[in-house]
Length: 484
Image (cartoon, rainbow, N blue to C red; front, side):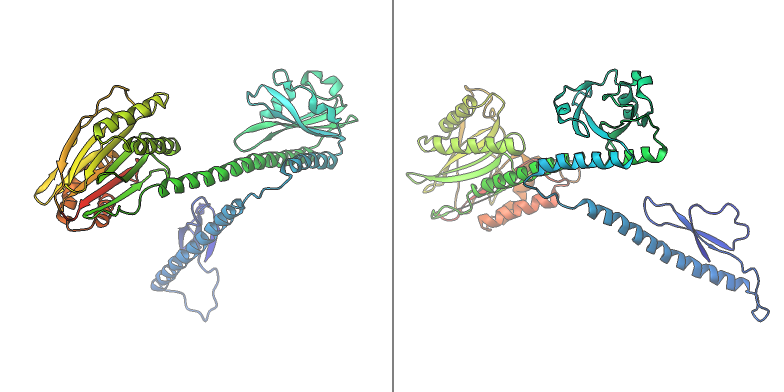
């Protein structure tokens, strides 16, 4: 029995058995073969057909074991390479100076390895129309202050950027190649990553000479080292900026989460609870409640349209405006008009939001509310549920928009449920939105639960029925009247 890497042998007439062995995804498949015995001692009887079948069965089992072993080795080989690429970039206090030193050292080492007296690294500009000297060895430093060379007409550089090494044994006879420095002999190779052309590497010699294949291979290796150093520097800067951005984003996410109320107000007969999930960590959804004089309780659920950090900033401004105007407006309709005017005058006309703002008289259970856009407002009773609100223009659409108010009463044991469109419009496994009815009918039989428990049930309902990961921010607020 023998394992052969590569495809199945063409001549298989002499084989008793052959089967493919898969060494792993991306690896060349091999074959396990079972050949006849050329000569046998006389004392060993020839195998029967049953013995041959047993040998094939054993060979097939061994082939599975071998395939599993080879796949494990192949996966280990891939994983070790991935781990090698996962080495973290560590900042250095003199990183920029070290890059200049590294580039010059690589140029010096490459030039001296092939007997040249100078080397230069030219990189393309953003428009890929000019080549600028970025590092050199063996040339005066004043060369770094010279203007960039136009790529048009730089025949040698253009040829190198096509992937060909250019060798000029006698530059005096080859002036049409436009050698950037006055030396008798020169060579040029491309500097590139697997996906991007960066520029060219030139080496110069002070006497006429040729460059053999071994020396041009050394130059290509040096060019690869330069490309790796440049790419590493670019990735390092991106990584450092990304790390700073992630830290700032995490801080904003914590701040936004910590600004949400978590403790129900100490009001006899009332319990409140809320939950918000931002699709991108930071988002535009929020809920809030705060107490006002004369036994009033303000509850609000908002959605600053958009996603990410921009929506989060707009939501913070909107939440501050709600609290500011809520202090002196005792009518939901007037408060919403002033909030809309604040948003409209304080933006460039590109900020919109949906909002429910309600005032609850805690002594009587009377709710006076108004809404902008289409947030869902549901009143849950033992005999059913109703949606007392109606759609109005979004905040920020017009300074003259009107937001009619509505009234209803909450009796002991009844629940006011408010949630944003991100929860209402989440799609189930059949591609249908969950809607107001689905959540309301789920909670209506659980009115004896606490406000916190009802909020958890709303989350569970969403997780159980929503098919796709959250693409929009989602918020729900539960206000329950417990006693008269």
